[in-house]
Image (cartoon, rainbow, N blue to C red; front, top):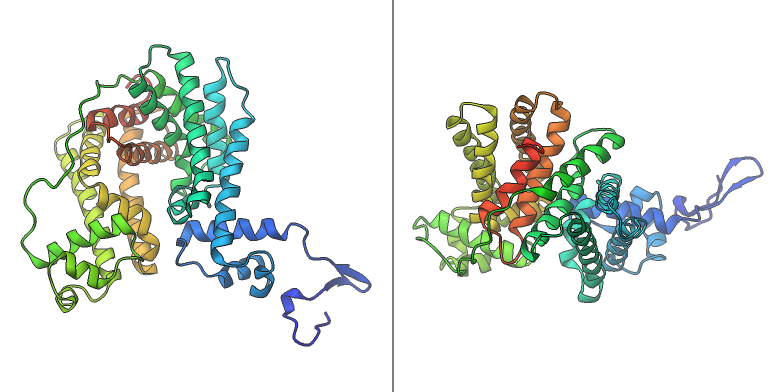
Amino acid sequence: MTVRPGTPPSETSQTDAPGTRRRRPADRRRLIVDASAKAFSDGGYHAVRLEDIADAVGISAPALYRHFPNKYALFAETTAVLAQSLRSALDAVETGGDDELRSLLVAITAASFENRRKGGLYRWESRYLEPDDRAIVRDVVVHQHRRVRAAARRLRPGLGDADANLIAAAMTSVAASPTTHRASLPAREVTSLIPDAAMSLLDVDLPDPVEPVASGVHGLAPAAKREIILTEAINLFAARGFRDVTIEDIAHAADLPASGVYRHFPSKVAILEAAFWRATDRVTSAISDALANSTTPREAIVGMVHRYVRLTCSTTDLISVYETEIGHATPEARNALRNQQRITVEEWATWVSRERENLSITHARFLVHAALNVVTDLTRLRPQPSPERIEAPSTRILLGENG
């Protein structure tokens, strides 16, 4: 290989054999976008460096800048490409007919499974987009929801607006759930199991909607300074994002000097990780309580869903921070938290497989992730549905069509 003076090795022409010149790949831009989607999904927008993406593609940073002038430009195109791939999958399904709903759910599941390494980008990182770029993603999300809702109503004409919207949101959440985890299963099994679970929600019996509770602070605030700091930090992280909150902001919200915050936490990251462990501990406690009050696998499943839904509904900010900001934790903390999450899913999956003896533990894991995803997504709806309306589809997924 001949290197011209001043030319990065990755940008030189290479030869496989004497007289054979290897050309740069024609789809380099696509390779860059693909690598950036994985990087942004895994690490979050702010944590990713363009040099890391260049290394993943096998090019120099100057070569990457010839395609994208800055990180935001690459980020915006990456989200647009991912959104368009979902739109294409939806548009490939013919409108109308009894098979449309299942075909849509299969298409969403297949796209989610194929892009599961990139799903965090589509799901969480679009909040960093500027309005025009965010609109591209939102248009696809709205289009997806409307098509699923219309197809569901053709099969169940009596659905009212509130029920149709909730069921469509739950169905798409199930279909998109493979992007939220790394459990292993062949694609053909995923594209059967997950659409089946989503389709089972078509006739789920939903409690009547209730008037939303007026927003505002309820109950007493903590008195201990450490708890005050943690509570105010969670609120700020949820509202503005971890990166845009300073120690001074947290101190001001807690009515303390910055030095008062440092007496309890050595850094902003330490506060974030304490919030993560707070969420993890509450989930673990909810599982223990459910099991302690159950005598059968079915009771255990119903009890775990009941407690998890109420925990999520009452601590929306805490759960949101956990899911959107984990990329800012230290690698050691991320590994420990994700290991605990796997233990939690395994506990749920064990009881599901015991209740449904024809279901393997591997399939049960996928259904647990789907049910948990539904809880997370439905609690984000505004106005937030009542806990009972969130429990119904989540429980159906785990117990099966006749649950």
